Image 1 (tube, rainbow, N blue to C red):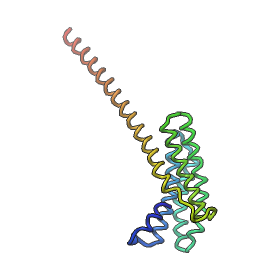
Image 2 (image 1 turned 90 degrees about the horizontal axis):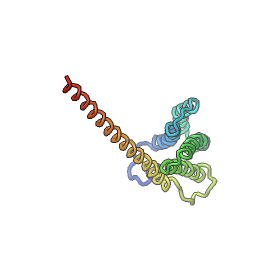
Image 3 (image 1 turned 90 degrees about the vertical axis):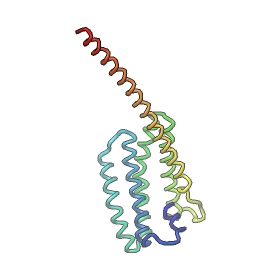
Length: 193
């Protein structure tokens, strides 16, 4: 959605319009597949059937969309597959919310809330652009919520990185203390000989 809106302001086409339409569609499909993979990693679980569904969706839907776009059925494929993408996003959101609820960390809650906001804005924008449930005069939410969500995810990642660096420093200090202790013990043993 937002990428397509941005492309309207370009003065020169990057490529054929059909290719651009297909790439935008692929980015939507692959974003949902990556969200599912991320959610499983984030929650520390592995759902093999869900992973296979994500992989199949990431391969099959772009192929079907490529054919449909070439045949002039872009809106039809979008109207049928976007509800599928929304439905496939729901288990991912549930995993993220479950992890945030279990850990009760503010960064995890912010990340999960950001992901819920992105999917919610996708549903809203689908209701405007593809389904026609809302008037076209309504404002798209994705351009406004995506930066907020990305900021929340970035904040969580920075928080995790800082915590990991703290652990590395603590482990280094412990290792240096153990090396010093062992060196002192070896020096004492050698001096006793």
